[in-house]
Amino acid sequence: MSRIFALDGPLYRCLDKGWQLLKLNLLFLVSCLPLVTVGAGLTALFAVVFALQEEGTVRVGVRYWKAFKTRLARSTQVWLLVVAVLTALVGAYFLLANLTRGSQPVLLTFMVLVAFLLLAAMPLFPLLALGLSSDLGGAGASIMSDQSLKNPSLGKLLRTSLGVGVGHVLECGGMFLLLALTCLLPIFLPRLWPLWLLFAGSLLAFLQAWLFRRACGVLPVRARPDQAKGRGSERSTGGDGLDGGDRPGPGRR
Image 1: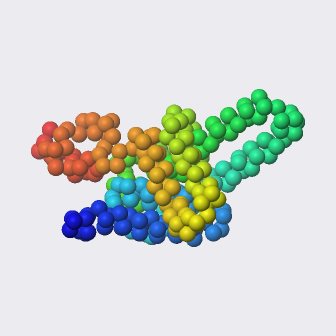
Image 2: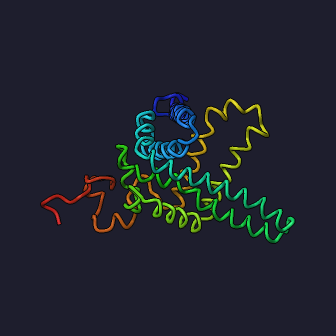
Image 3: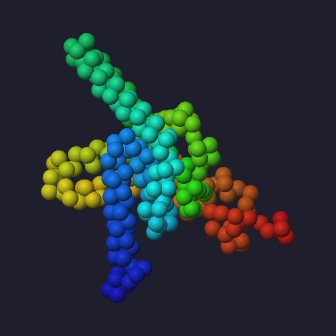
């Protein structure tokens, strides 16, 4: 029983994680008040969630605002593009419905296209956040599978997001399903509004980040196999595979 209430026990860890997610969610809500900055808020949200999943406890406020400022321009560009595409898709749906008099084959084909685009969009902001990992002072540099994502062009980001979305339909579909359930929850369960307001954004990002890691093969505590190749045995060096501590010294071969 005493183990449960210890400082390193499961209860304390659970409460600490909940407190950090609460702070993160409130920061996200504040930063999204001007709707144009929602993209930067999403990127910062995922950046801090990645850090939480890797390191356990982080300085949420410092990490969040640093990520927010670093990716403000690119994230805003991506967010405005997403809003424009969604607006165009809604308009196109009603236009097609009127032109084809509600033809089911045409509308079904259109909805398949919409589903394809939604899957491609799910990894956009996690990818932007992933490129910030090494800049935020954490162990995130080890999980970069593509160094060009550290500061990606818009074209590179869109191509990578498309590849992840199409190549990992189950994980990205799960990310979209979580998003849909989160949006519908306060409608069908209005009594949960207070909890939804306090935790919805950060908890959703936490779960989506887990699916994103699964989709991309991101390993939080050890190097990827291609990164580990040629390093030699990590056990003999005492390194953890995340930094230069496991590199051979001058006297080793």
